[in-house]
Image (cartoon, rainbow, N blue to C red; front, side, top):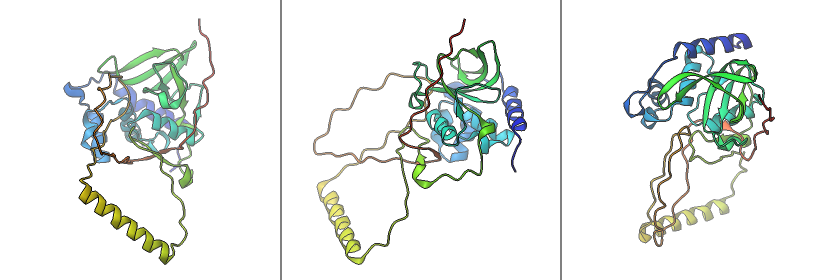
Length: 264
């Protein structure tokens, strides 16, 4: 059922306001991460950075997930709004505000997300999760670190996205993926493909090929020092792969530049 812009904003803000004062438990455990992990059937989200998972939880409780989205990785969430023509540089109550603490204006650099409660005198008053180390609380921000805003009321839930424009990228280690209608495969091509597959399989068995376990990260919020690089292993060729959880955004696009707006 289609919702009016007013009810989308009011219902979402009503849910998030009731959660003010929530504090993260030891081990970065939150009820929002637990809910998200159960929803996507992946326990690694139980103790993940939770700024965006809180918004997914709140949208579900408010019944507005179709307009807000449900993500754990903030750059993919921003792309989701951009793809649906619901991305802007103008704040408003109920908008999702995406930050890059380095001050960049590219969606790829986004670190954090919150919800705009109101705009007053050149400042945005927000409700944010996973801030000041462990809290869900109100903050007052200027726009110096803002990349842009996702506007739930502008999202069209029945928007059809062409398969070629879909990036499967909820996790940071995901890669762009496109689909297309394949032509019928002739028998000669099929036989050649089969021979090639068998040859590769034999070479892997007798060559002792080793596939590294893919690194898994659960999103950006807190920056940490990357681990030192592993020394190269001889005769090894790691496979590049990715696991997709949710359709999110268009590949190869750059977010519109944020309008600079000086404040006193």
